[in-house]
Amino acid sequence: MKRAVSLSPIGVIRTPHTEQAKTPIQPVFAKGIQGRVELDPQFADGLDDIEEFTYVYLLYVFDRASGMSLHVVPYLEDEERGVFATRAPRRPNPIGVSLVRVVRRDGAVLHVSDVDMLDGTPLLDIKPYSRRFDEREDAECGWQDRLDDADVYRRGRRGCEIESWDRD
Image (cartoon, rainbow, N blue to C red; front, side, top):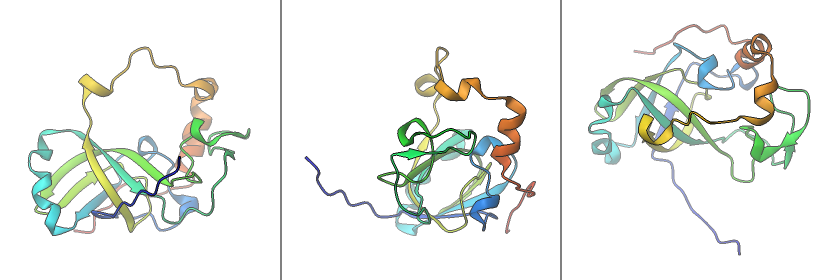
């Protein structure tokens, strides 16, 4: 049943985050932190029309995740959960997804905000956020719905002291 799948990065994500332990766990905890998506120049034309969107999903590789586990203790909890009920990086296929704000485009470089990935993360794809397709009013979020908001914010920031950053 298993077949090999081969993906190649289309670029690299540049952020101020260099320490995994101090990197926010999701974009909502990285508000205002600037980064860049540097595409391989052969893919630059694929960014045409991207500035019409407020948000895009970045799909990337957790290239510094160590190992895989079907049960993990998520950052927001102290209880073990099935890896597919979390966004933890220790997955069978270490693929991450983050919803970031589009700031501007300069050729093959997309400037974004709310970055929560490590500097140098390999980028697999970019997809636009669409209210029409992505928003769900009836969404239930399992164990996450039972968490305390203040505790979630504290844990989600993971000690990140960066408020904003741009290497330009």
